[in-house]
Length: 524
Ligand code: GLN
Image (cartoon, rainbow, N blue to C red; front, side, top):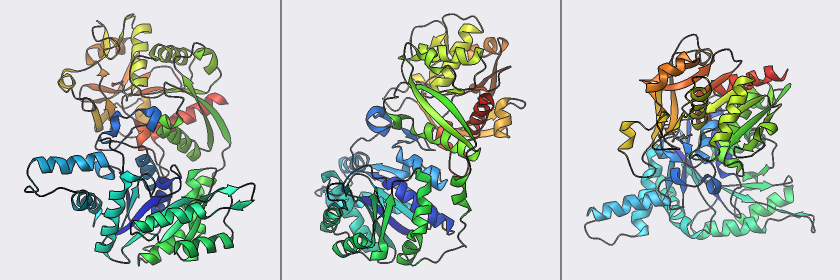
């Protein structure tokens, strides 16, 4: 039977419930248990895929094509799990299900209410993990006290009662601020936050305190007393240089031992601390990578790219300095001179595209390692068409619907889909890699499966002309080109998919690993 851990948060948002929960999950995995994590978000957007990256950070694409919140990226990177639609739920989506059922007459004319109808739907979705993993960690978005979060707290209260003691625990994450004038860590916000949680009928089993300074014994005693938890279940999460150090910090405090005790679990294997060693690898080289995009004012907009570069560097003993540039910057080429590599991520719309194309031209001609992702790949195809194959007006149908030379185009099957958020090729697709290419060298296999999220494709009608001009199409899905390369270049690769969603701590993505290694060689 599955055991359940609910992760709630209080005092402030952005304390790291996702990372804390995933770190607990990682420790349980290292004790031999299978673990999965899911998020329940109180906001009402039904399709996070259409949310503005400036407000919300990147849209993370799950393996089945669900367009989700970036927290799912943490679950995958920490736990090495593959997320799907089941790992992300919003109020909007939950209410929509209930309302649609009501319209269809499913409730036989009864009054439809938050309790029990919405709460039942929430519980049903939580229970999807039953018997699938040893431990399911459920993160509740927002902070306790938020009006829209109440149905979720009520649902987990009921769920806890139904599953019974010893099968479900609540871990509550709070902030313990340090007040300089008083030279003290303050526990009152935590007390208030737990009081709110108890008002909703939930008693925390463990409190994890985000704090700038370690909690001394007296502070822990006070939190234990006022918040009704055992002192040895008051844990601290001090600011760390890297989020991947958090599992070790929790391990040193005995978080996993406490959690297993509360859930009546005995370790399935001897704890293997070698996972912690990944973080201790000496970084002997340093590289500078220019990332050229258009949401650079919001670093979370490229979260998975940044994490993938970091993890690829970590495994190869390389410190990666990723610097973000606006593609529209007039002095872009001046600014990126001297960088060891250029990465162009995915994106939408024409703004900044000409800047990206000129940066790709610069990388190609000056043999600077280049890695293009999705729109970045499409721009590299346009660059090759214009400057290698002499198709001067080459462009994408996305930028000019009536353009004659659409080397990137919307194919007929996609044209028929019209609703926003529903027009794309999203989720996992397989591709076949050609032997003898850079892609084959990186992956070491002919068959790959990667995640997509785009409307436009490399137009197969131009494939032959571009290949004759020196562009290598090194992988295809059916007739659709998936990876492109350039001959006589130390590292030039464009991928139509999003490899940044498939990196994890145990295994960085092979194209990211190859890219950082090529940058390090260039740096020497
Ligand atoms: N805008 C491009 C398309 O829709 C690329 C999308 C992306 O980079 N994710 O095809």
